[in-house]
Length: 201
Image (cartoon, one colour):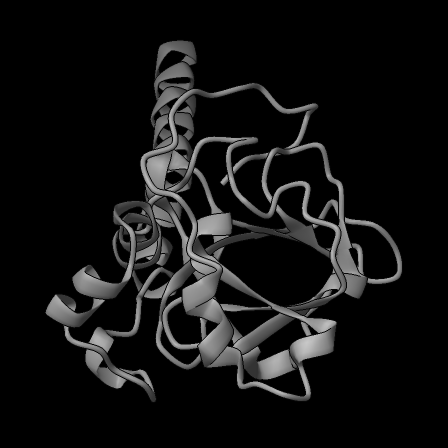
């Protein structure tokens, strides 16, 4: 009887572990679904994007790449103005919400407009993160974390290569799309560094 009891406990424990391991994988598939390029309000051909974006901008925005930490043009950028999508020119962030997170990437604690960024569950690299993409063209921007400053507690950790900048002075005299071409980020940044306890892109 004692042997039978131990065997039942072992089988029950094994079944419980099996269910615990399998369930997240089953849930991950529907949660990680992405919109296709054809379903975004603004579309560009891959040929056009390869012509007007640097190799790093293309890699980050179209292939969900990441630039190396502390190498991006806007990591330590302090000018007043708006940060826009480098692909379509949509306004995303204000310099008023930018802060130094120590992560090596530009960080913002809030969006300029709530619907300017689309959030998607990202289960790549065996972990769960929240990917941020431009709501207009679907360009990959970076990720959202819950370790930012008050009042939001959010940290939008964004690749410089996915951003353009529109200075405050130019905001009233030009459109966001015209400033993105003048704010091209250099491609091919190399090297790496470890951040101060922050989860990275």
